[in-house]
Image (cartoon, rainbow, N blue to C red; front, side):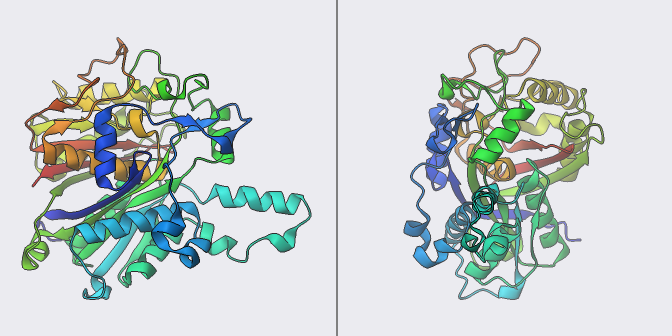
Amino acid sequence: MSQEEIAVTGVGAVSPAGIGVDALWQGLNAGVSLATTDRDLAGLPVDFCCRVPGFNGEMSLGRSLTWRLDRFTQLALVAAREAVADARLDPADWDASRVAIVLGAGSNSMESYESTFAKLRDGRPQSVSPLLVPRSIPNAIAAEVAIDLHATGPSFVVSSACASAGHAIGVARELLRSGACDIAITGGAESVCNRVASFAFGRMGALSGRTDDPRAASRPFDAERDGFVLGEGSGVLVLERISHAKARRKSVRGYIGGFGASTDAYHFTAPHPEGEGAVQAISTALLDAGLQPSDIGHVNAHGTSTPLNDLVEARALRKVFSNPPPVTSSKGVIGHAIGAAAALEAIATLLALEHQSIPPTANLAHLDPEIDLDVVSHAPRPAHMEFAVTNSFAFGGHNAVLVLNAA
């Protein structure tokens, strides 16, 4: 295994803040939740979410391609194209066999299955698309990105619920270090702003019930938080060994300095009450990066806005860091994009290092007195930092933590 630094040379994003990385950064810095009532969720107990505004696959990808792709794959393709362009790579010129695709997705396309079941229920089986399976299974995002970019190296999807994209980025980094590829296109995509997801997560009691004020619903670490807000989107990063990037004279945006993964092995939906799995993952990532806790200047928290998860994450951070660095949660603004969340948050963390500024956590009016953290709120905070951590924790007890280094 090579110990060579793994550089981020390109990024792409589609988020509730809009299309493109610049839109994501501007939205996060505005510090205002993007949750709105959604007509597709009308009549449900929770009828709001953070949807990508005005996204039209046909405008971005063309009609014929959009016709055969479900929304989560459309989001992945748009973000992947932006990331590859940002990296100044041309698929017509690269060695396709040395390009890997490793993406994360938390589930299959529930939207397609919902409409299909309705057709079967109504006695219209002939209306079911013959493309149902290939367009809706989780690996569609990796397969379609590989086809679109003509990448013939290893390609697959990692699925570990809300930690999916974090694990995908970590695995992509290891493929590069092993020499299995020269370029890795990684991240995640998810679209869960649909009736099945809203009803199912709502039945679990995981979602905020603030239907009268959706913009105030996602409030990580706040004393009055009552659940998370569904989101959607895609984040894609292009990774290369630093020698490969230098050989083609490409400047880098940052580095994936460390990766840590663990499993709580405690409960399928609840985190370990003392945050043991989170502590293990953060500590492993720091060890992998060769850093001490005191080296970290910022944490982009998992910060879901659920009562238990925010509290447990705070406990874990206090255990790892004797004096935790400033913390923010992107989910206050863009909601929870499940399998794509870790990728969007990794990009947000990278941008924070680039700009030496930490975006605020939306809707943090009164910090929970049990949460002993310095949570950035109200406005962006300038900060001198070289290293940052981004956390992703998931149902099943899956934990993925990345350490990012400034360029």
